[in-house]
Image 1 (cartoon, one colour):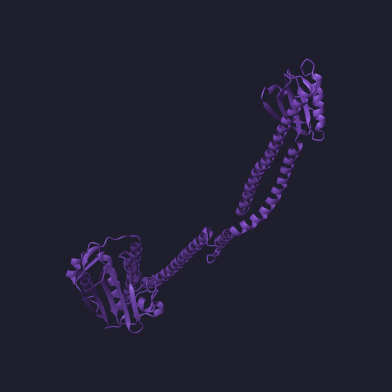
Image 2 (image 1 turned 30 degrees about the vertical axis):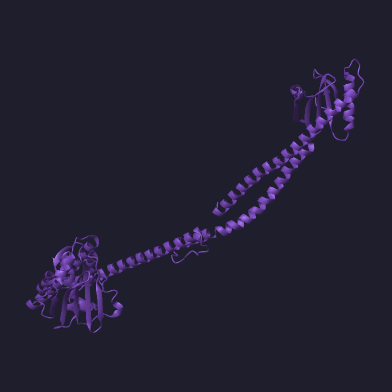
Length: 477
């Protein structure tokens, strides 16, 4: 059952129960009030009849000073006759509670009569057939006799009014429930509109329409829920976009990796087959073997860098303090045999907080890329200085530069700006991807500034360790 109909159904049930209970008490209250009024009138009439009976008894001639039973019977008949049209019935009984005078339709029940005592006055409601009566009883002391006077007043109209009240209230309740059901349906439809909009948005998103958003139509809790749902949808859409991007990146990575493997393997297989199938002179034999060795080293270098990238993505590091001079001396030794470029190194004394081998790999990759991008005899500058919050490294070349539209992609695995130039120097497009992962572990990032035809500057800052004191920084400066 829909939430709308549940609210509507429970509202009708509660209203029906409320109308029923309130109607029952209201009609009964009116009935009890009317019945008490009739009882009071009947008791007043009983007192009047008692007074009339006493007065009539005093006016009846008596023998031996005793009121005769026949006289009582005659008085009872006169009292009943005097009240014709009032619907009053009488019964007069003697000391032994034996009836002396009884109206034709008076009840034969003597329960009330048996409870009457001196100075007592009692009443009860009785039913005879389809009629209701208020029966009253009182003791009358006259002429040295104790008589019992009982009356019956017809109150059927009061009970009929109660039945009519219940019937009318049922009709009114039914009309009110129908009208309330229509009004509540409209109200519930309005109140549950945000829920229906959320349901529609959920279904649209379930079939892949992640850009669909629920419309906010209120500022209450449901409106806040709609706003939170849309915020969640924005996050989910961003997550899906990221996942799709990662999937596409993996597919591109696999395609690029397969392509990069194909070129050296083709050369290795071709030259190996040439060595196997033909007799070559010494020079051709050396060239073929050299091609096989060069392409093999290229595959080895590619595998090592891929392994480094995978490891850096999974590991956590514990940076240790190390002198910045260590890294620059390492670069001097590493590229001492490079005669194509002139390596110029300058640095400030300072302490670097890092995993030494990983940062050496970053710097060697950056310098190697700078050398590959430079013309023979070009200058590559490597510098370091103490910066606010850490130690900054940068590598500057004056080579071909990187187009602006490709700056965002140069750190992707296997991406190469000039593929022919990179492959001719055993490049595979993995160096910068490895640098980014290593710097991420050090809570740093790689900054690239480049102008086509003028050169490229790549820099990063390694943040200070928590244990580094202000005094140490002052000493370094």
